[in-house]
Each structure stands twice: as C-alpha cells, then as structure tokens.
Length: 157
Image (cartoon, rainbow, N blue to C red; front, side):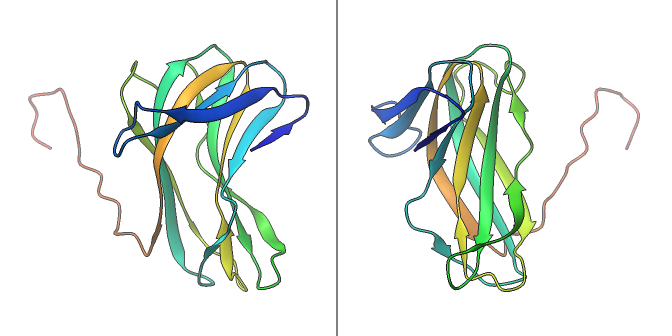
C-alpha cells in the first residue's frame, strides 16, 4: 500500500468476504491525497492485447467527495512503465453504491507495444472511506460486452 500526498489509512483482513474466508478492508482515514494498493508482483502480459481487470467492492463507510478507481499500467521487459495508466471510470461517492451490496467494477484496455507485464493497482482518493475489495481478477482476451436494452415503456424495442 502507498499513501500519497499526506493521505492516511490502513489495510487489514475481514471475514466479510464475497467469496472465500476473508477479504481486504481498506480504510482511508483523512481527506487528503490518495491511498493506492498495488500487487507486489506484476502479472505477465502480451503486447497489443485486450485485457480486463476487475474487483468487487463493498462500501462500509463513505463521505461525499470520495473517488475509487482501478489504476493499471503496462510494463516493458525491463520493468519500466510504458505509456499512460489504464484507468477505470472514476466511481464517485455516494452515487456508485447501493448500500452494502457487492458490486463489480472493471476496466478494459489494449496493452501497449512492448508490454511484458501489467502492474495492477486500486486507488481511493478524497475524503475518508472504508470499503472491502475482494476477488480481484485480470482476464486476457475477455468476451465481447453485451448490452441488453432495458425500458420501462410498453413500446416494443
């Protein structure tokens, strides 16, 4: 875990897991900077390939002005960062969560030319927040997205 720009926080285990016996519980305790969790070891990846990274989130405590984001980066064979971060949409509080439910948050990107690995990270910035991220995943060549139409009208689609 890294604390940036005077952020304060801590990470510990909780038995309130989505699957398995435990999940992380991440607490950002002040309104400054950002808290970032990064996998210790980068994951092998292929250049110019489609990837999806995702995490399930359960919000425990929140305030206005809090943002959550997946924050990934491609790395070359020597371990140096390539290009820009591949970020998910920024989830702003309190709108992205329906109470205590687990919700999947994800991003897709095509890796840069020369990519040998992916550095997977998750970031909380802004005001204090406590949440449980669980079941992180990285999927190579994910299936196409399917968007089903939803309507509250009686008119046919």
